[in-house]
Length: 388
Image (cartoon, rainbow, N blue to C red; front, side, top):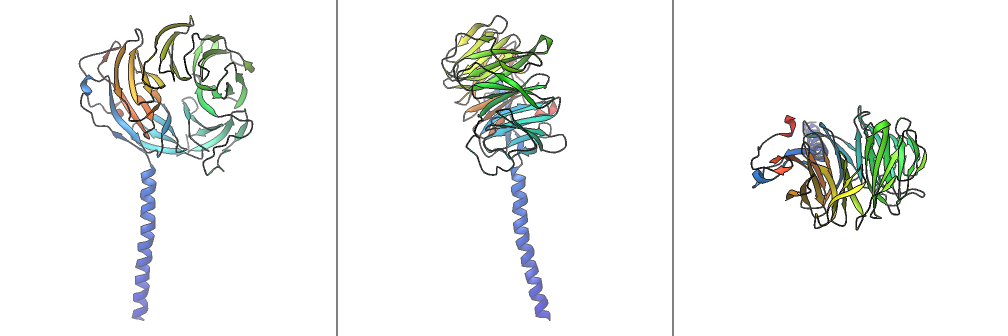
């Protein structure tokens, strides 16, 4: 009897040990998958740099392709087929939105509805993150709508685009969050988000539309600017209730020498970045080219942004370099090595700049030593992102 009890205890201990060995690594692995925003140590020469990297967001397993933010939340899309949602106050990843068929190439958050829109291949997944990470609808490049997640069955990476569909390259929301514009193929599809219905397309480009930006003018009219691989930038005026095919109201001349990769509007000015390594500044009212820097970077200009609180344009390139430009004079303000890999996207909130790169990180920057669009001599250090 004593021998039986001894054998039983030994087997029980062995089973417990095996169970713990299985459970603990699983917990650790799950914990390790959760992204975290860590402080970034100040580097030498920071006192003369126009930007200081204050934090770094890590957690994706592959290249970061897109980024969006509010003052409290950060959204990042990656080649690992997920979109992560981060809390900027705590520095923690809140949730990971998965089930995408391929790379997540564009992400937008709507402040008014708390909906997140993520793009992968020819699909736009619409997420309600107020309660839990739930995909409530799936939109396609051809204008189809599915209730729920139409991609959930896709467990492995899907390369093929369904027949009749196109790769969606980028999406943009209008300022009121009532319309979504999706660049796919040579056109841009319009979506009425009140009814989740496609109302038509913006047409006119001879090559794939790679980027777009939306502004709102008087009478609730949306102003959409599109940039294409055909080297051209076009303007569309979309009145509320517009249906069918909408043609451009203006073609910006002269075109870039290569495809357009980035667009941003600031006040009455439009800035465009291209694969020709150049940046152009346009007057939106007069539709004229005001200034240009033909060789702004040594590689493709992949992303543009505006430094919060300063009349300074920020550009990022495929070589990982960040450059700052005075918006009025287009004189360079400064430059730095932003990442050791291509910078794919830039976004800003009211206080910080976010750069997403191939190195699987988003770096979070704070403007330093900038005064009236120029580099000043003094700067303060050590401000924490959570102190805003």
